[in-house]
Length: 166
Image 1 (spheres, one colour):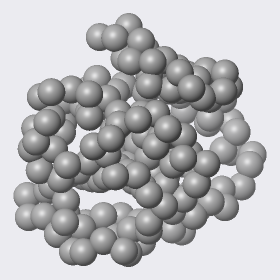
Image 2: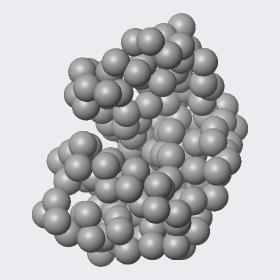
Image 3: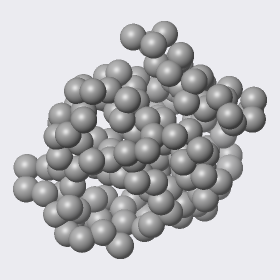
Image 4: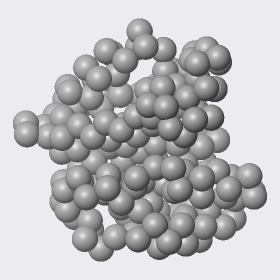
């Protein structure tokens, strides 16, 4: 399965510079995407908060099992959203919208994957409160965060102040 994800990522981002392609492959190697994907419903509406270059959403969009799932990805980094759009998952709505711009109870599932480590801890509550506001009844919040692996992310965030906003 991981080999398929690597091949898919390499192909999706084939028009991106080598550094971006290598970063994307690094994400595939360090993030358990296959395990995360199993927690998404086959139909409904999904939001990936801090989607970056949209890798998780690209994997969902290309899987026919999730054809009934409407996909949204937001990130504060315009360059990453532009990269996600160039990677070409036409059925994903990528934007730099903030969480506050969405209507209450809009999503069946919201994912936050390796994002909070890069956000000031004092902002976590507001982010999570927005997510819970956006979930439909019986909706699912998928939260996956780096703890101390990969080591370079752990050490980088210990010594580089997190001042990024969602």
